[in-house]
Image 1 (cartoon, rainbow, N blue to C red):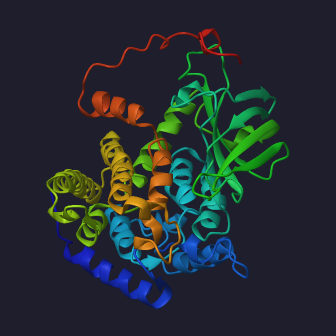
Image 2: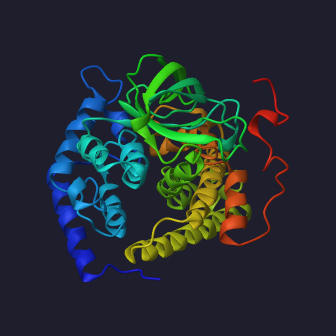
Length: 413
């Protein structure tokens, strides 16, 4: 396990630090975000500003470090992307607009697309000219992506798509999307899927934003009615969409393993700053026991990430072990936020950023963290992946494994 930068990595870190210092705004606080400063305020347009920054970042060669040179990258080992992200985390940079396109959609296109498609779509995504989203989750499939019902029927050189997707992050501003749909309902559920990409401006697409409990609305419902996709926009073979989707999901779980909310350092700081009935919270034995639990989990994830970075520096690709970080971090974020509410007592109801500790980051995390346990795979799905594909344990019982999808004993279709 390597903890230190090599000489080349240290030089790159210095280069990234210098460029960010000259071109990005330093954060006003640890939990200030691009959206909190720009989006939704009169006179500002967060997306247009984000596109401008992305263009500048791509011109400087920091937008896709591990991409092939011919696609606009530097062909560096993935660990350089990790180093850049560490440096960038101290600055106010756009998040939530380009990660899906650059981190999930383009790697899938690189694997399954044609050279002409890579030349057409990769530069536009890299420079922020086109934003992508991911049409995977469905209301009828629950946590089982392979149970999706959106249909893809072939008509000549086109596919006709009908169905509904949900929890589509950024669907309302996306220009393009990747889509997995059921092309053969008589095949077993993992074998009857086909993977496409399509324009979100296609006739027949209706996007409805979902109002979240936190007040944000970056999730969407997407309805697809007789949407036509050329067969040339199919990725992978007909019926092999599950394998293509796994490529996307492995990259997604690596990206979503990080905790983007209050962590051990913040809850430790809060415990030092508040008092309970019997004295300072930090001196309370029960509080100290919870802090110790959070510390152990945080260090475990940190060291696991170092192991991943070492593997990436050797040129290895993200594997199922990256589910571990997400499985630990998502519940931990919820537990830390809930514990902070206990420490804050009645002060926990204050959402005013100018009054609450850490600009109400604990309150926001409490509202957002349940969604984090669903995104990129539920806790249950991730436990199965770790058990079967990392630990090599016997597979979970699946009575529907070989049944045709249209014969599965499920609810109304």
